Length: 138
Image 1 (cartoon, one colour):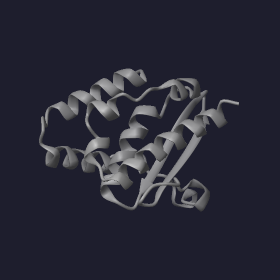
Image 2 (cartoon, one colour):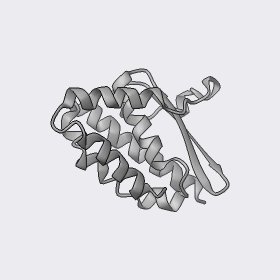
Image 3 (cartoon, rainbow, N blue to C red):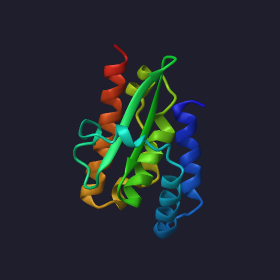
């Protein structure tokens, strides 16, 4: 699936809940439970995403020309947020990740329903994933 197709799938999932943000948060928490978890030995300081309120570790590896992300977070909502980002971006070529506009974040209303510090953390996650893609594309 392309990044755009995955984004569309996520938008449709969140539309089911309408304006029920409690349901959307529960779905986000459930998504966090399916996150491809980073190996314990990779939970190092250099893999912590700066700018997140919680501790979020992200590992980025290039395999067969595609980036595979694994991650973990110490807060359940944040874990769901990083799980969404991993779901959308992992398994794609670096140039696809770099160019992705990630419209789904605005379309599901995620940023506007997060606290300012969590919204900043989400932006930091996106920036880190794109920066890693740029680094691994060289």
